Length: 117
Image 1 (cartoon, rainbow, N blue to C red):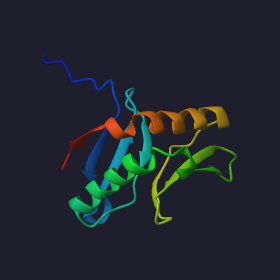
Image 2 (cartoon, rainbow, N blue to C red):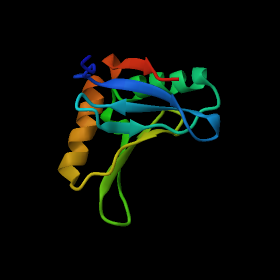
Image 3 (spheres, rainbow, N blue to C red):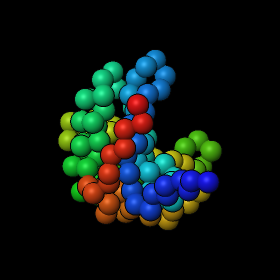
Image 4 (cartoon, rainbow, N blue to C red):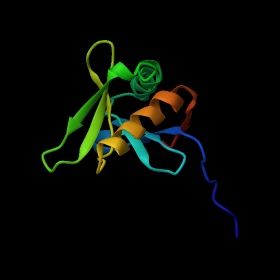
């Protein structure tokens, strides 16, 4: 039996989703999605979105803290053009959300891109 590859570092996964749009997920080393993108009409634009995450995540001021109606916390990453680059998962506490921001800030630049299309 062949073992599955286990990713122990952050990675961007490109995949095709609804309406044949391209999306990416930035995943933590434990496999959890830490940031989800909008849909892109082309793979090239999706890759530009990944590059925008790498560029804009360098500055923690580009992360905007949010609270959902049910009280859970999340964040969005904002690009220089004030567009949302990605949305985080939902967190039960502000400290968990802040750890998610710190993780992306510290590692997104070096995240490998895996094309699942």
